[in-house]
Image 1 (cartoon, helix red, strand yellow):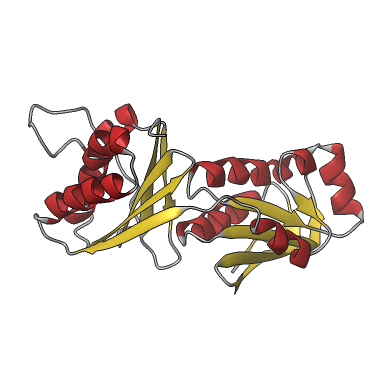
Image 2: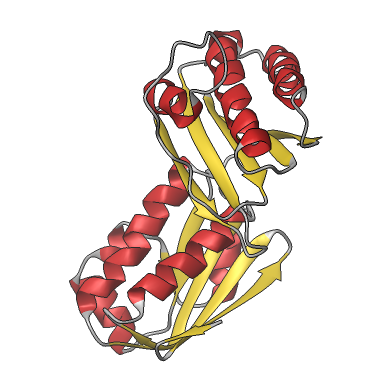
Length: 246
C-alpha cells in the first residue's frame, strides 16, 4: 500500500500485526499512514508493531500520529502499539519529541513482539448476524448471556442497548450482515460491530420511537468512548467502550 512516497506493508506474527514503513513520514503522508494503521486495528489484532527502520522524517510533528494511534488502540480494540527502530536519526527524533515515553519503543521487531505478551488477557466472544430485522434482538440476547457469564451484570443493560443500536444500524442503514464482538479486560467492556458498508456512522437527534432509529446518538450518550475504523475489505467497524462493571 503506497501513498505519496510512503509504503505501508502489513504482515502478521501470530495475531500481531507487523507494519513495515518505507519512505518519508511527513505532512503529505501522515493521512495515508493514519488510514493504514486504523485499518490494521479494524482487524482486531493482539497488538501492532510499527517498524521504522526504512523511513525518514520530513516533518517531526507528523510523528504525533503514532501517539494518537496508541491512544485509540488502548480504547479499542484494547491492544498495545509499539515502535521498532534501531539507533539513528529517527530514533533520536523519537527521543527529542518524547514520543518514545508515550509509545513503547524497541530496537527490533522481535523485542516489540515479545512485549506484546505482557498485555493483560482479554475475554472475547463473537457472534455473526444476518442482515435481518431479528438480528438486533439476537444481539441483545447474546450480550445478556455473555455479560452474565463474565459477571459484569452492572454493564449488561447499557451493553445490550449499544449492541442493539449498532447491529440495527448495520442491518438497516448499511444493509449488511454484522459481526458482533465483545471484549472484556479489567472491567472495561468493548462492543464492536463490523459491517460491509464504508460510510461512516452518522449521529442523529433522538426520535420519539421507543426503540430503534437512534443509532449512534445512544452510543454517544452511554459510551465512555466510541469511534469507527475502515477495514481492508472496504467495510467498517464501529466500537464503543463501557466501564464500571468490575
